[in-house]
Image (tube, rainbow, N blue to C red):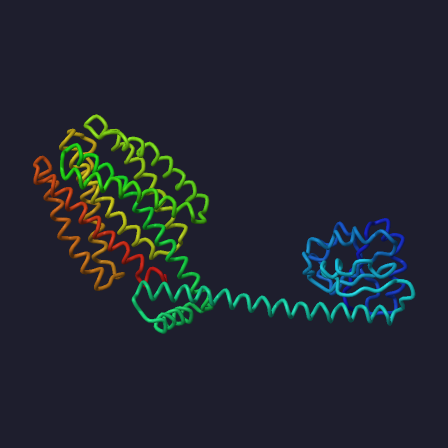
Length: 427
């Protein structure tokens, strides 16, 4: 038996009018219908999934309550909607907007007339459902086309390939993953976004140490003019990265980590505004370490949010920029202030840098460009170690400054290469 639900404006109205409507339905396939009120209509339809709903306005003045109950479906009911009313609606457009497909006055309505109404309701609902499905499919295809075009552009830019080759890569990845081309394209763009975000969080780690190193460099009188230019550039870079990260939709953990980064940056920014001297270096270093810790937590949170194992390599490589700056900073502080804390960190930082460099050299996630840059980084790393050993001399300090900057540039290039690598963005 076909399922129909009668909806009345209230329980009192149902008690009075139910028998009338049931008698009208007695000779049809909708005999013995279920019934409910406006208040519970949406829950009842969701639970029972009737084929049709007949709204029963058996007395004048009941229409507003029925119209109000239909708001929840926003004009797209889950089944056919018919209206039984005292007389034709005064404002038919309002009922149509709420999803009602047909109506008929109760006065003089017989069983054949009711079946005709039910047939109209069902036919119109099916047609509207088909049109909505077709429209949704078209919208999905248009949306997917946008994702595909953007993904092709990303691959073309990252790999220096033609549009046709980029499309072949996307299609192959979709077939391999058994996913729609649009899904793969969207995933690729999201991976690229998270890789860039991890890179930027890693830059904040590096910049915390670079700024402290530049302050020590200023006190030591090493390449002072160039150092002040780099300090201004570094402060701007911090601000730009924070602005970029602020524009992301982050989960609770990453959003909290980003707020911690901002809180750590403010006191360091204020300390850097003061004239650098032996008395301020320890404070700058302490605040730089706080920013380093906050930025490290942010990078970890972003890596977890991205949920792609290949993003780990971006984080490992980006951390090397920070270590090069930290090593140069601590060597200068140990020389200038005889700071035991800085001196104690030197061995740990050198060991961490060497271990990560070996990890990068051995990873299969590589290319000719990456291998060549790693070889250059290895040579510059050896020069930086020489600067650490001779940090008490003018030549040693100059080597610290120059090689730490050279390694920063080299690992910026490497991090960007990993960020753009096909294995990362298509992971």
